[in-house]
Length: 100
Image 1: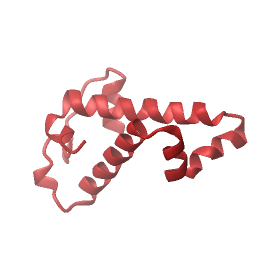
Image 2 (image 1 turned 120 degrees about the vertical axis):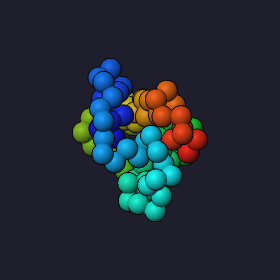
Image 3 (image 1 turned 90 degrees about the vertical axis):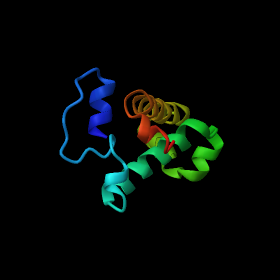
Image 4 (image 1 turned 30 degrees about the horizontal axis):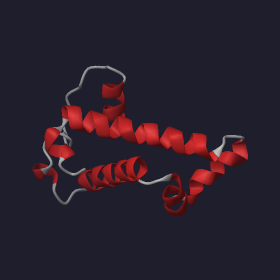
């Protein structure tokens, strides 16, 4: 997550000892790959489902309304996050993009 956010902000791609984004096969059956897979599944869901589907799958999105944020704005924020994740993965990590 941190790496994707840094790249999205235009910061340089740092070297990582555990470079799961660059080499998925080395990290099979690890928590790191499971976490990455869950992040990509969430991003794909957020980007592709309509608002009603999202609210059925993720009812906690309605919680933002308790703080004065309209549900459509909360959903919009999560959609932007999803597009950012997908865009960075597609642009910088072609092997990982195959998981999308």
